[in-house]
Amino acid sequence: MNHLNNLECVTLFVDDLARARAFYESVFDAKPIYSDAVCSVIGLGGVMVNLLQETEALQLVQPVVPAASSAGPRMLMTIRVGDVDDACERLRQNGVDLVNGPIDRPWGRRTAAFSDPSGHMWEIAQEIPS
Image (cartoon, rainbow, N blue to C red):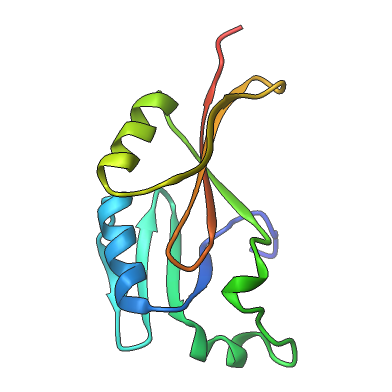
């Protein structure tokens, strides 16, 4: 298994682990697979998301220094949904403010974006029937 096409886990460096854990459990209806004092791993589909307290990030990426959450987003994670408008309503009911959307994109998707408490960007998307 030497292929680089089997994404297992995404690690997100978070400012406040308790707040991030509560956000992901509420918004994504996710339950922790593993949790300790510095991280909480949840499952989203077939991928694990590791919420890691940012103070622990350096040991994983050194000699590179992790950017502060105030530096702005550097990636966008997309979740496919059946109905973006319905998903946006559920997000709003969970206290999530949308960054943009819903928007019909020229590449055939209806999307909306939001961020987690540490500024990680998420997008929900559905195919627009042609």
